[in-house]
Image (cartoon, rainbow, N blue to C red; front, side, top):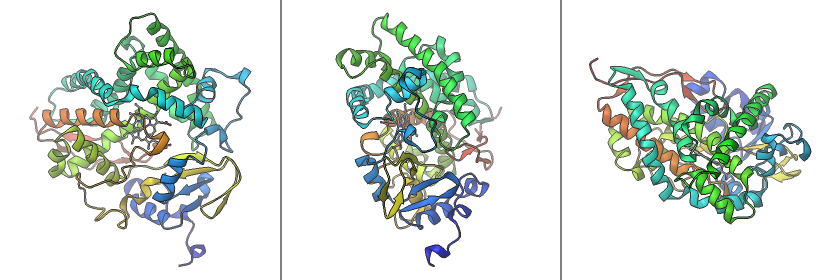
Length: 413
Ligand code: HEM
């Protein structure tokens, strides 16, 4: 059928609908077949659908990652009116200027090495064990409530080195951080998130000041303070931005990942031992969990730096372009037997955590944190099963999640 005779794509692909939460596959495949760059009226955005184009965009960075370049973003205020939030997000942002971004990634690379992740593992393992100790041996429990929702915050604050005395105050204000640049929510909600972030920045600066007076410790903040001494282009605001970015980018993503990892493995119990054989086998299994679950709704936002011709379309300066690598996840031309869950499936290229200069900083931490939590779960409860088919929650702006995840442990209580 001629493209112009097809029904509008938003009548088939609507990530905020119950239909999508129940089965996103038909919508994703329909969008994938509509062309390389598809206008999506409800979001006033272009959607980039094809992997080759997405890879090139990731690699060459010809589009802007700066939220303030979006046509509907709030006005970029003049420098003398910047609050702490603008200082962190405009002045020294990971999200803004490409050259500064590359400098930050280069100088901070040692802070994310394998060696550092090994050390973080030894720090978060006792916290995770403690969560399971507190849970005890119930006959059934809600995995999200008892375990999953606590893990991201614990592991990132431990990784960064935020002392426990600050946890209650920062927990209240930090989890809304990603909403400050989410294009799909209301201005009021974004403004509230910005106020929370300003409070979070105050706390982070307090922690930094305290750490400057203390002997060096074995955590991310101490590593960054050492990097600051050695690198002129890197200062306290870069540290603040990075800490915010770690908390912002690492919280929602891993909470969703926890839920889908447990769900997928319990739906395919023959794969559990293969997935958890080692940290490396889990890293591959997690790709399959994410593909098979297809929980993404949005993709990754970029903004047109100028009026431009892109993939045959005329794109205006400031328009949003969403890269959606997940559209391919059930495409039989891309994956053999996409319905089959196989934790040993090969992923080449492996792009779950992005690609190129903005490859996910927290990839190693995310995979390790999931691996140790799931290993602990299945070791403590070898007869685990889903109590029922969990109800899906379509209300999250970024991903399909579950309202609860009730597990039967097989332990008689
Ligand atoms: C399941 C978990 C996660 C997934 C699937 C994931 C995926 C991704 C992807 C695809 C990108 C690239 C985004 C883009 O191109 O716009 C990214 C960037 C990023 N991620 Fe993750 N991530 C996860 C967990 C984490 C964690 C735990 C942290 C921090 C501890 C983290 C920190 C970041 C940061 C700071 C960036 C921005 C990097 C930059 O712009 O240079 N992520 N992530």
